[in-house]
Image (cartoon, rainbow, N blue to C red; front, side, top):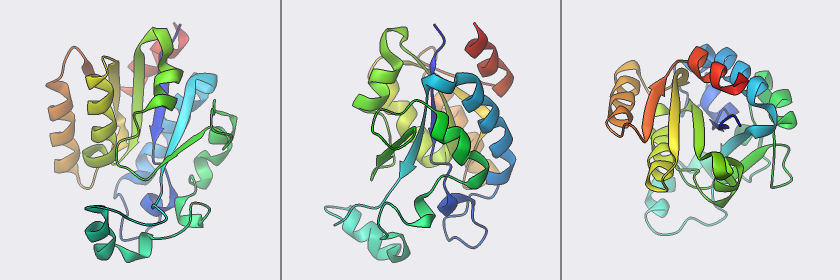
Length: 191
């Protein structure tokens, strides 16, 4: 069985050039993410970072810095970008949202991804931002004993240096986490 695929936060809020949360190389990773999602099809989930209805704890201070983000889950900012929305709609979804997993947290590892990973115990991860939500998801999955493969060229960070540092950090978790190319991740989908 091929690994599962988690496509992390490929949303308008991170892809829109006018957004304060714009990920600079976002547009460059859309094509490799699309290829991975198409290859993994029924073993893929697209995640969405969404704001909580009412921030609690340290999230209150976070949203004081980013008040624009306090939008409902159906706001256009939280939607999967147009170039991937169709693929996301075909992906395996366990929450009734057409292959998406919504969470008001940076890390997306939890029961939904654990169920998708199942007994194969391998997860390919791609998306944005390498140095935030991707990193948080990978480390939580590793702690759960999952073998995680990070498709480096299908991820983008706040900037090139942060992207590289995050990949280096995740590589330190080998063999639980391995940095791979999109080509290598695509080969696993066909296996």
